[in-house]
Image (cartoon, rainbow, N blue to C red):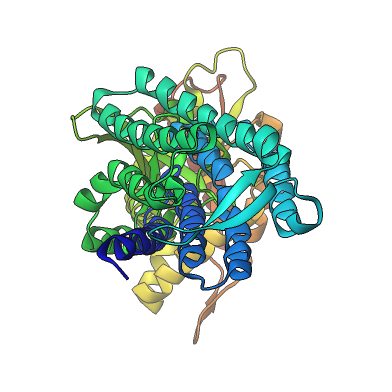
Length: 506
């Protein structure tokens, strides 16, 4: 084999291997728009070039015809992959669904079927013969299907892809125009030599130039597209991105997801959020409120609290290239904050509101309440609590206070709130209650307070005196209501004391 023959054979062979590498690279990298489709395109170009190589190397005429027809597996379908790639890459792919893709593939699949059955009808190759030259090659007179269907349809798809790329060139940032220029220039070179072959009979030493040159130009397209990714997305960065506990969603300038890590994907409402809109993949996010570079927002979803922050992404020319949404789980921080707030507002012994928190609640309920339904306030004081501490110790006294809080809470209605405002003093805020309701609940509380308190080695009856006050008749602020209820409570306590003294023998 002469050096020229070796070169002609090696060129498509190396191109085929290059296309397989390009396809593997495209399928294994980040899922940026168009990357996977470019992988399919490279794989089909490699198929075309690979069967062309086998055709050149095949020793017999029949075997050369077999491989020559097989190359239509890539030749007929790569224009569809090119158009889909251009649509995905430029973002003009909303029209592209499964039905549309099936329609685009209908004619290429029919071309493949006609190539397989060509000896029976000659629609694709009207005549075929073996030509001598540096590399013995098939001489082909193409049939009407090749001339009037396959070639125009392929050129139409390639042309539409170029239109999409050129239209994006005029609307895109300068940082990305170099990419598009490289893609368009490579594609135009491919089309130039293919048109020269189909329309003018141009060959390279008797061989069709497309399978020889297409891998070279496709490699140029890949280099134009992905050299930035090779330079800015090293493996270590990718590993950190995928392993991060914080969810990260990468978006293009149209808010479509171009990459997502597992932590964010676990929160998505879609099984496959890639290349979907942010709002569709994360319906719980207030997308309209997520300003790029704005303050983080806290969002509740399925028992979690997420801190959501949207940050800008910059391209090579420092222009906007999209944005990233960061999803951080702050549930534990919220719970800790709630616990601290609870500790600050709760009585440590009884776990009801402490005096400060109770009075703040009363002021809050009274604020702007003029003309609305009344509120009532009860003031409860244990009658014989000092004796409990003196006779049974402070542990027994603490248990009495805890049990008193439980008994009061068991009697209250929804919306009523109890607080401990002194050593053995409790107050109850009754919502939507007039004097009659207040007196009725005070009677019920007095009834449960006379039930015995029990401990490990003691049992006693404590009892309680309860006073009440109603807003606005007895006062228009918390202090006035507490004073009024306290006064009634002491009046009740005094009456009981006087009653006991009257019945005690002299």
